[in-house]
Length: 488
Image (cartoon, rainbow, N blue to C red):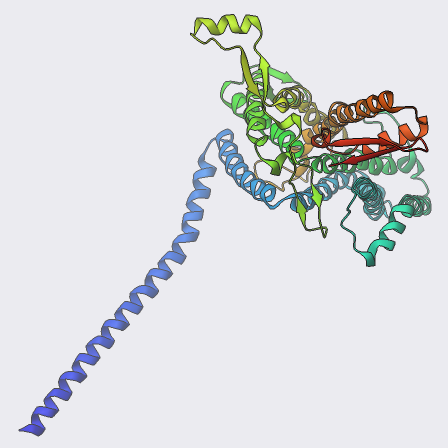
């Protein structure tokens, strides 16, 4: 009996185990089937989304594609800004190279039938020379203006030699390219390689010159990227605010033109309308006013970029200058009178002085910067580079779906970069220089004479110091008639 009971229990356990194994197998098969269905569903979903987009009107299809990639680019740009100046410098360099590639590619297509030797190779070589020169200038300016440059003792001699000879090296590198171009001259095509003949578009005077094509491209692309890097080190606000203004104007001009556009703006760009132009301009002014108010509250955006210890270790910590401090401004009488109707009786308003500069920048980005895009449109039509189906190119490339090439997105940024660089050096740096010069002259008049040479030299040495040190500046005169300036 006990033997039979034990056998019965063993058979029960075996049957239970087999049922559990069967249940596990069923679960695994169901899980595998679910995964296979999910994998099979993904391409189907992609196909459905593509079919949905293709079924839309071309106008709306471009709207959705452009909108989606705009959000992706905006998110990526925000992440790079968060990563700091080094990431922004790498971004600027990558954009510069790609824009240069797109313009040079158009030139290569134009001159391809002539089979010009070394056209692309020389173009890239001259890009290398230009970057070597401009980066050398930037490094020299930064190290000479920084009392504690991020240079260790081992590399100090190398850096000094680089600063001393980089202009000579740049010139010699350019001479090598110049000589190589002379060797590349091809019989029966001298006019193509040299001529500066005019075109139906008089501004494009380098139509038949491969040498001129390369140099004009360097002037348009490399110089502007250098200006952007220069202003970036004055504070991230001078980089982010102008760049985002152009982006804002482009987005809202497209939106207003898409929904309300009726009146053509310019023949070079038939899709541009007055409604989009005006709507984008008004929106950009409002955007600049609000964003500048927000950014002035954070040292990360307003303090000059300073590297400490190494090239990848930077800091943006300082006492913000008066440009980024809340200041009380008197409300004009007419405005005060109008506010009285709303029950508001206020004599002063607290604002950041930078907000008034933002109005100038936003007006330029709305009224003038778009002409960089019109220039690019005329450029494409002037050279009439055709596709294989004999159609003319709408964009410089297809790097960004719905947007075209990088040049199509950054053509307006080129004009904006130059304006911001000139504006900052004219109105921001100049005011700081005058403030320091005023202190020197005041001390000079109160403590005694000195030589004009020492006065000019001292003023030059402290011209780069930030405005927040003005109150802590101490100026002393030595027995020899020289000026000693200490900054707290």
